[in-house]
Amino acid sequence: MGASLNEIKQRIASTKKTSQITKAMQMVSAAKLTKSEVASKNFQEYAAKIRSIVTHLVASQLSDLEELTDDPNYPELNEYHAMLTNRPIKKTGYIVITSDKGLVGGYNSSILKQTMTMLQDDHENQEEYVLIAIGSVGADFFKTRGYNIAYELRGLTDQPSFDEVRKIVSAATAMFDSEVFDELYVCYNHHINSLTSQFRVEKMLPISDLDPDEDTGFEQEYILEPSKEAILDHLLPQYAESLIYGAIIDAKTAEHAAGMTAMKTATDNAKTIISDLTISYNRARQGAITQEITEIVAGAAALE
Image 1 (cartoon, rainbow, N blue to C red):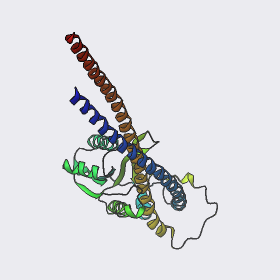
Image 2 (cartoon, helix red, strand yellow; image 1 turned 45 degrees about the vertical axis):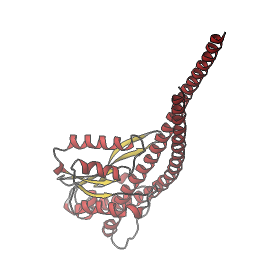
Image 3 (tube, rainbow, N blue to C red; image 1 turned 180 degrees about the horizontal axis):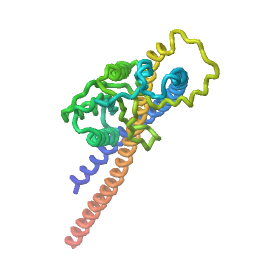
Image 4 (cartoon, rainbow, N blue to C red; image 1 turned 60 degrees about the vertical axis):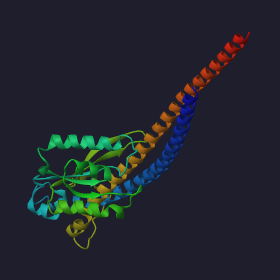
């Protein structure tokens, strides 16, 4: 019985240490989540502004070309707005955003499982799509299964700056421009709140979510130098890059929330185990005491 008591005491001690570690990791993830939510909010303000500017320029261009044709695929329109025009889909690009490490509950498995289901449902073979992986978990997952990854990015910081992801988002827009793929989607977990995230597949290229009817922020026409077309040639890739960057920030926020929730669950489970072990220890200890008393009483009775 003594050995059993020592074993239970050791398990209680080790579980308490684990609980302290998971509690600390929960607090760290909570702090990271707070910072990410602030960064995401700040980005939304920037995204709204650049969207307003792009929408204004695009609406103006469309207005200039309405007299030529009502067909959005008209050649002259394509020449000025390659990133806005749908073209025949020969190959599709997917940016899959996962974490660089574990301890985030079902965050990564949810993304990868649903991405795989989507690929199998929408494509007949791997020749129909190109994968770009952000995060070690996703990159290793696809490489292990023999998928060809056109580009990958590992080791993002907890609060990634645009400079960190500039290379991969620029590469993605360049691949679209050079027709490596004809449309681009981003697959990631969207942050809803600290307890909930939602798998999303958002179309990034060609840019199709701009509505000319939203052009209400500018009442006067401006004289632009250089031309609107030249400005859009520079502004549209930046806008597309900002959309991808926004998805990365959103995914990082969801990752920190998942990490916080996973560590809280681990801490709660550790407390439950400690409680159960403490009860077992007390019962074993009470049993040992009872046995000792019984032996003493039996010994005393034998002497009589």
